Image (cartoon, rainbow, N blue to C red):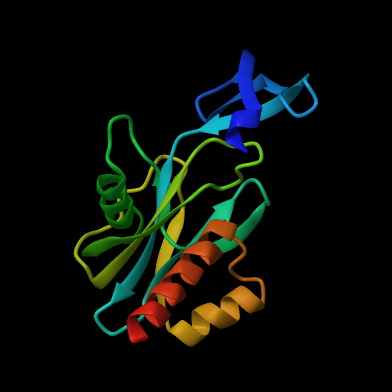
Length: 182
């Protein structure tokens, strides 16, 4: 299927510190036509599912300007230039929660492959303990809190957790648990 598509041109339409938008022209062999597609490029990022020694999840509560609402999410953020995903995950976990834990990779996600080209790396942090104060960016206002598995599931179902990547991270965690139990 991939052989049917050939990139034949690209034009930068918009760029700022967070994202860039390109119009990419692809020749589609099946109909011998060229189509223009909009692609959004952003930094890769990591999201962490932190679980304490007592089996509680650490979520962060923060205001999100996109939805103009307060949301609960798993901690995470953009990778810095040259930073490996696991390093970024460990850094974001400490910065946003003050917790440290044993990291292992859950999976990689493409947030929306229809028009985005970045990757989100999902990690599990086990046996998390509070080791430091938060180290927030200038426009972060974050409150970490611990929740039970049942709490997290109810928060997803009642709309308190709406961040799609956080819900996907939770799903990957549950898939890992189910796979390990077999």
